[in-house]
Length: 260
Image (cartoon, rainbow, N blue to C red):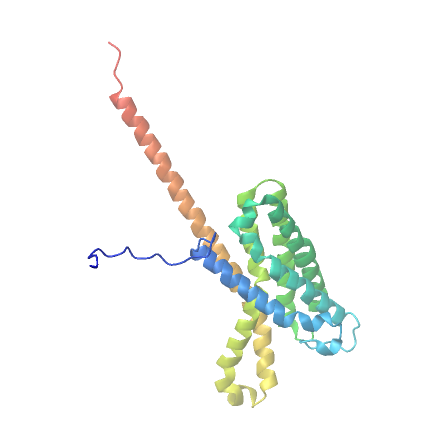
């Protein structure tokens, strides 16, 4: 028995059935994983309805503070879990599923979480910087969510996609808040004694206030840069197509026979 000298063709990487991985799919998958992780860790303590389980400092003089924070966290968890599904191409092809998940995302997640977040922001004990960041985020969350809904209802799906990207960048602040908070605490630690006199609580309070701005402003800025670049590329492609069409029409005019 002899061995053939022909070599077998290299095997392509094994893929999951029905899954086509590309850069967009990877970004959506990582984003979805981060959203599920944050929701799984930070939402359950508020489902017990026990103020003692709150992860944020509560105002002892307000009976509304904990309910507002709890509703904000629970419905925010719904937004985190359903938001990434809106960017699934497979679900977008199933229009009914896409529409219903979008309604759950907006009406059971974003809107109640933003409205209760406004109440929680007005009652926060974290100072005016954090309050302003909370209020700005929640108001923009409502505006972009309603804009996404209205453009979808009007059949303006390109505009709907843009507003959804803006809106979800604000939803994703729940994830980036934790990243920025950890980073800002770590960055300041070498100056704990010189700047804060060894008071870690003061250092943390500063990082906490700043992180509520950095949690969503960079997200929204990245989306705006992405949309601007996409619009510029589409404009260049449209211009190139128009020039090609004009050139082709001119060539046809020059080569067409003239009547005797």
